[in-house]
Image 1 (cartoon, rainbow, N blue to C red):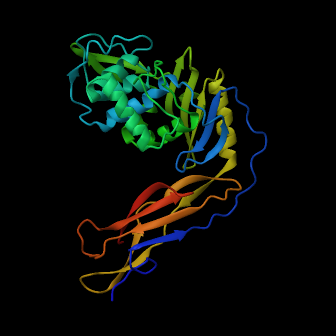
Image 2: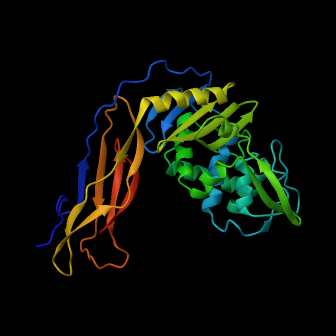
Length: 351
């Protein structure tokens, strides 16, 4: 009888517990921060490397636009032209320069939010994607619940204060990690400047990124700045070195540029590059009856924290009948877990 080796035959599922060896001791001299809320995490696993009041709900100003951009990108039709809502763009604060009657695309609005932090762009995107700012806020909170952001509540798409509007440093790190998995988002937030066409009629103009950290520290590739009188200076950044990406969030921090750099110095000294992968498994071809191997197509690279006792697991999902000749060469998938939380997956393919 055909069966999957290393996989529970009655469920076609299996779990493999990978080795989690300790790495060198924690780096000395923890960095200091004046932020009200702060966290440094590994982007792949969400593991906290450094935190200060990381679960306290605080106003987060224009870092709110991370969620607005993500929903806008996920809505599709990014390059379809339309006229901005004339009421939505009438807002205070930072702007991408929209005027009544301007012709834009959702893609342009996303650049307008991530680079010059346009509140006009955020409102215009909210109306374009949700029909109204109020309805778009409902969409934002639904997405927050899906991502497990327990301390987060959205009232506005721009980050201008509303009653109850706020998040925690840790929630914002989780949100940034999710957003960076979107290729368009990752490309946009890493731009120092971008030349776009919009207006009536559309004409070229250049938008500049408010995130100075992009040019201040090697490896920084995002994400978003923010400031209001109530929230203070807020910054969500990401940095990649040697295949490991860390995310840093500071809320209400007067010295955010320098403190992010110090936190990255500390963070990259406290983690070691590691890979979460899965073994190949032997299965039986339902047509020929012969055995063949299937292997995960991808692995996950992450920063392994020193002295970590984290548990990493892999759970296989396969079909009851597997055909080696299947045109799409897909034989199921393997799910990767870190401390019981799913952090990714990979297709199982025959080589």
